[in-house]
Image (cartoon, rainbow, N blue to C red):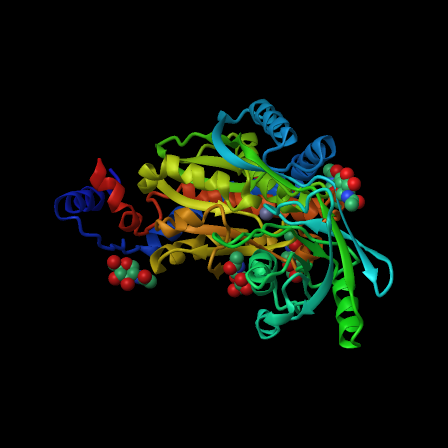
Length: 481
Ligand SMILES: *[C@@H]1O[C@H](CO)[C@@H](O)[C@H](O)[C@H]1NC(C)=O
Ligand SMILES: *[C@@H]1O[C@H](CO)[C@@H](O)[C@H](O)[C@H]1NC(C)=O
Ligand SMILES: *[C@@H]1O[C@H](CO)[C@@H](O)[C@H](O)[C@H]1NC(C)=O
Ligand SMILES: *[C@@H]1O[C@H](CO)[C@@H](O)[C@H](O)[C@H]1NC(C)=O
Ligand SMILES: *[C@@H]1O[C@H](CO)[C@@H](O)[C@H](O)[C@H]1NC(C)=O
Ligand SMILES: *[C@@H]1O[C@H](CO)[C@@H](O)[C@H](O)[C@H]1NC(C)=O
Ligand SMILES: [Zn+2]
């Protein structure tokens, strides 16, 4: 009988009776955990050997190349994504994984259509561009307007009187993706509030080879929707220089983007059932959808395929952990974590059985360890687990796991992990036509697969579920039962 049972019962009891939430921590007998992990060292070595040096060398890369070369990019709402999901279901079954199935989720269906932008003044110059997710089109006559170009939202506000009737071009400095992406996600509505007719945003990247980067943007409710797209760093800087010289800039923008009715898609699921606690789950994940550029190989084919590989390696070795290993390939991550939110809604009643949720969505370059979100006791355990990865130099436990698709679980108190890797080049290719298999490295994917498999398998094999306050954010639903 697990040591968890008593506190679970007591917690549910208190929740139902007095409707209070309280946090509890299991203290950790770290010496006992060390012994358990020591006993799993041989399995970890086998996984590493198979993935990095053995028969499964380059398998995740080769499998990903087959998918991306066969289907190309996989936009939410498209038939191509659904065909790729069907293909994955077949592949996962053929690989001998268990409980292979799709779980339905409604997803947005945005289509880019034809699009172009041309600078007409001070001279004619075509602007490579990519419309942003959820953007409306311009209508068949396009938009011809003068440009106001700014570096910051503050500058835009300060020059508000110049904005009406103009196309706002943002030439924001790159201050890291997390900061600069605000111009892509909010730029259209911020400009529309001041009377702009369209907005063009400098691509959010630290390095450019004249390539536009697409991505999602969000219209503020109650604000007029205007067409919006990204242009290259090179063109944004050039138009900035022109405007500094007092030159008049005029652009013709023509976009036929459309938001069609939502469509049914699926999250793709496969498992290795646990031998002792099959209802308890360690979840590994990446997203199968991508933007409609390149091949979606890096974002997030790599994360999706090391997640498949984690289960595949365990299966190939004939291992079966105490808890269930579950792979989920999310749908429609790029439109705001749509598939994963649907999955959370359908499974949150089971939150106490979610041991650890893992997501890889910031590259599968050479791994260095994992980022982890959990309480101090869980972190102590994870520090020990990660030591099993020292043979491949990936044993560092960092703080703050990240990932849109596991975020709902982490906010419900489930411990979370994300892959940490040498991803300095990630945003060079992110959401561009350059996101192809050429970015992926088979040796790095072997190592990432080993990190993912060893971490998931070891945690799933410990005597106890990782400590965490899984009930605090859940008591509202519990009391409804
Ligand atoms: C891993 O491979 C090395 C070198 O081939 C070998 O010495 C070692 O015994 C293997 N370990 C396991 C657990 O299979
Ligand atoms: C795996 O890929 C690496 C890098 O391309 C290559 O050197 C190695 O020979 C490949 N291994 C196999 C088994 O194909
Ligand atoms: C805008 O693009 C659409 C779709 O390609 C095209 O039919 C239309 O003629 C274009 N409008 C102008 C004014 O060029
Ligand atoms: C571990 O749990 C115990 C018991 O709840 C608590 O007293 C202790 O502070 C926790 N340790 C860490 C590092 O969080
Ligand atoms: C780990 O680092 C050591 C020392 O730098 C190096 O010799 C070894 O090749 C590395 N192992 C892997 C799998 O990268
Ligand atoms: C992971 O940890 C590193 C090092 O602390 C940090 O720079 C990075 O932002 C973290 N990743 C996420 C997704 O938070
Ligand atoms: Zn992604």
